[in-house]
Structure formats: C-alpha cells, structure tokens
Length: 327
Image (cartoon, rainbow, N blue to C red; front, side):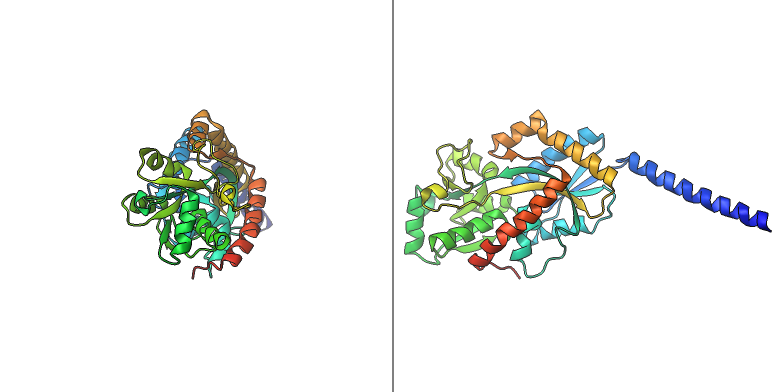
C-alpha cells in the first residue's frame, strides 16, 4: 500500500516537473507564433505608419511575424484596453501615445483600464512634436493673424484633432486657456481622417503631428503657423514655436511607447525590450523618425513606467485648468 502511494506521489511530482519544464521551454522559445501589435488609432495616421515600420523591424529582430491590428476609438482607450485584457504571454502588445497612457486618466470620466496597474511598459519609442496647420481659405499667414481672427470671432471656428486625449486635442485646449480664445473641438477617429477633412476644407485647422503635416505643408495645401514643442523642429526650421509667439511654457509634445498586458513574464519582457530598443536604434528607424521631426527615445521598462507616472501627474493640472472633460 505504502509502495503504491509512493509511486503515485513520484508520478505526480514528475508530472509537475514536466509541466514546469514545458512552460519554461515555451517561454524560452518565445516567440513561436505571430505577435499581434494593436494600434489604438485609425489606419493611415502617424501612429499607424510608425507602428508598421516598427512591426517590420520587430519581425526581423524576433524572426517572427508581427501583425498590426488597428482598433481606434475613445481617444485610444479601446485599443489599449484590448491590450490590457489580453493574455500576458507576449503575443499581444501595443503601441500607444501619451493620450491613452497618461492624459486620458484625467480627461475621461471613466477609464476601462488603469495604465499603471493593468499594463507592462516595454519601452518608450519617441517624442513627436505637433504643428498647428490651417487651410489656406482661412486667410491667415502666421500665428499672430490667427490669434487676432479667433479673438474677433469667439466660438465661430472649430479645430479638429486625431481624437480626445491626444496632444493635438490638448494643444487646442492649451491654446484656448493661454490665448483666451474660444475655439470648438472636433475629435476624429485618428489623425488621417482629420487631416483629410482639413485638406478638403471641411475644418479650418488642427494640431497635426509633424510627420503627417510635412507633406501637406510642403505642397502648399495647408499652412504651418507654429510647432507645439518647446524648441523648433529641424524638418520645419522656419516655423516658430507657440512659445516664441507669446506663450512661454507652451509644450504639447506627443510621445509613443510600447506596452503589453500586466504581469508579463520577466524573460519575455526582457526579449521584447531588447528587440524593441534595437529596432528603435536601427539606421532605418532612426532615419524615419528624425526625418519626420521625431526624436528617438528608447528606455528600459522601469524607466518607461516611471515616465508614464510622471506624465499622468504633469497633464492633470493642465486638463483641470482647461476644464476639458470627456464622458
């Protein structure tokens, strides 16, 4: 009887050891199937374009397909929530901006996830300045003319953005607060559709990412009035900052980062961080980022997590002062 119990115990222990070894092997073999990269904004916008370039590099680095899936809506919350609620196995990751990772906590009345508790930060990717652009039919040629027009016509004009909670949206809110002007806000499901309507004359202006705005500025279809960063952008050297035009401290710079669900196994996190940083530092990605006016800014997971927390705190008083809220 005792011998029978002993054999059963040994078999159970062997089974547990085999399961543990199998799980360890599965993690060490990561990735052994395609990875889904969720983009929380519509196709065609700058986040989508950058994400596809990143996915290509990550596919090459990890020797596995990385498939982009666009899931826009709610200022990026829907797509990031999909990442937060996915299995923490490294096969669902996402690229998100400071909107769904920091700003929306203060902007939205209710969040479907907690960006600090429900996500694993992998790395920050880049800083991305915005540029204030208007349609030629608006009849203004520089920032000062725009401000005079807006002050003379309170509430008449509605500017677009790529969505609630984006730095494009917050750029409008900061302009309203600091410039004491009344401007409406039209949030789109991504920057691509917003830019299309601006070029078509359906909306008079918007804060666009520099990457998305440059082709239209150079073709003359839109007019660049000011950039939202604290310093001028090398790809638009003649365009002043908003701060230069009489609004010191104005800075509505976007950033991108790579995230995964909370509780990602440490070995998989390490692989994703190392591979992602290599992609960001690669000549091809550096050329793409710098050519679009963006600044590559890779980090460790810990550094990115601390940065997200600091950005939540930075934007909270700005949003409260602007009175901006999305229910």
